[in-house]
Length: 325
Image (tube, rainbow, N blue to C red):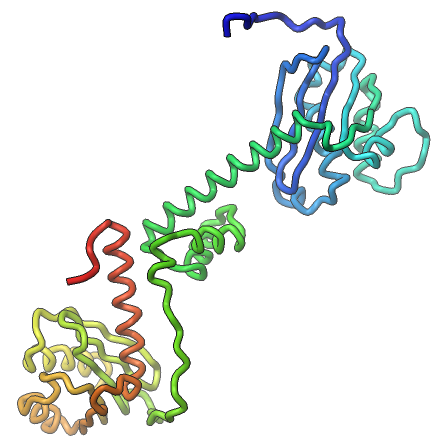
């Protein structure tokens, strides 16, 4: 830093504009006499992202000329590009017909400047390409960090729900951005569900709403009731597994939806009690129990148990709390 000096731009030198592009960004360097004095970089937006490489490179040139027009309007300019076809199409010394209307309009816009355009191989076009890569990396990193914040605040919703959240708010994240960020989340990876093919057993199916209500007391603090026909779940937080507590929860379901014809439950102690059986019998509701150690017999409830428990674990881990008793 001891040899660094601040100098004004020597306007007697030929101004050189070096341009570069990538899939999602463009950049340029204003470089009179081999000394860079200005830099430009920006992301491509909307339809620009679908431009072919030739048009992206031409866009970099046009945007640079517009940005620095107050410098360049009164000087002879050298434009540097690493696309040979762009150098040919924008060369004002050639009178060839350009069939691309967009390029033709840009040629007309550049006609107000005194310039020559030169081709430089990509390996030698270091400054603008480096600037483009750095800009892309910083943009991708920012997007990744922002998506990680969304994932944590939404309690690790998964790809589908996070993508729905992003689209509902018109946020500029692609499906690939969401998938990539979710796959890099350690908590999501740790609690990713392991799908096991079910046996070929055939379960008894309901034929009308509220004909059968499979229920379970597997979770100490949550009573889960699933209406089998619609698969609609009711989850009741419970302080205990006493029969009286289960009866109160079931009465809420009956008050909302009407009396069930049939209830299937696991072998939880509250469902085996005489108090509950007598209560349901007085209401004209038949009961049955699943086979011991056979959760598939009450598969709908067990599946919802897994979903609820996963949501609880995700919430605990998101706040750095233990997820085990």
